[in-house]
Length: 289
Image 1: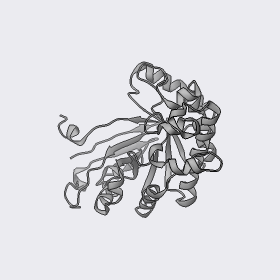
Image 2: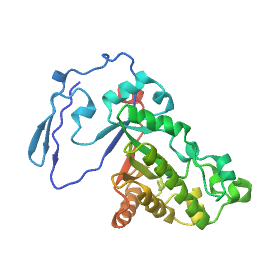
Image 3: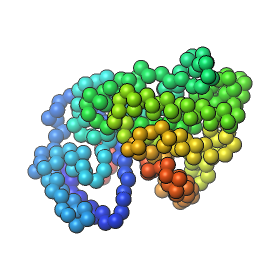
Image 4: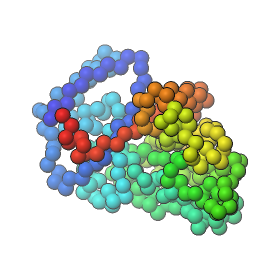
């Protein structure tokens, strides 16, 4: 395996996130790449940085971007797989366990005195504690999404048969949910979460905002996206980066809409970048020419 790269960055700020699915190996030597097999030269602002001794992707690209893996709770609970992940990556993202349906607590929410949502922290503790122990950064995914957010969260009195709650109620619920998730992570595990996908997949492939969404339907428009970033910036630590995340961003209409959104959010000072999501199974990659 050879890795060759020559990158020139001059007056351009590039925010990139690479996410792959980690494949655990219990034999630490199997699959290693010898330093001699990797030849790399990086040019940044005219200064060459030698990374020829790199033996993993995270080392080869240490001055360019973070190399990460999307994992699940089974990996968190498996020391051998976590060691392999951390050897080859310097960031992890949970595939599902930090999404709203995994963190929202229905029973506690129904009993809450202020009528605001409550969160579950058992699995969240496992994730954050493990990331801290392995000294690997964690990208939070995700705070606001049309999918994997339970119907009861959007409902009057948290009962789906009652229909949707009104916009102001949902705005309050959103703020409290984001506040509780971010505050819990930051107060109990400071510095572990370095970035959040604040809003996930808010656009359709038709070049317009996704309307088949509990957020869009309760708000009546796409303004929930701005609210989500406003609240996230309000409660996130200053050094935590906030991203809009989506897929198929190469399609012109969708791309243009995302760019317009990002310009508006950037002008307000509440977004730091965009996540470009893709899914490439290892068996597919293995057979690529």
